[in-house]
Picture 1: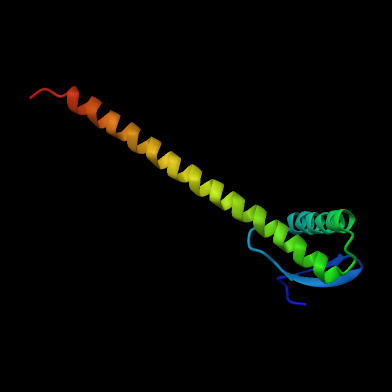
Picture 2: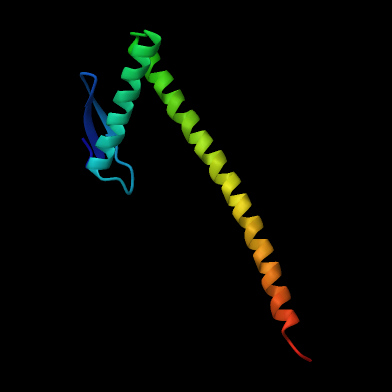
Amino acid sequence: MANNDYEVKVRGRFIKLPAVDGLSELEMGTIVSQITDEMTKIEEELGIVDTSKVAIIAAYSFAARLYNLQQKSETNREADTKRLDVMLTRLEKAVDGGQTE
């Protein structure tokens, strides 16, 4: 196992996962727990027992959440940029209006 790998037991199987820059083993363990919880939830809600299908649905679920967060972040970024532009325009007008020639 390379020094960067993280070995974890997921649903009875040992899996080597590549380390992620900036994440500690504790944080990676938390992520693995979220995956396991999501897989259990999917099995219970949909009655699927095929581990591959459960894993794909879990991956889809996480990807959809990530996509929604990215869209929300982009929308917020655009709104923040517009607010900053308005504030900058007001500030420039205030500075220009206060100057005497």
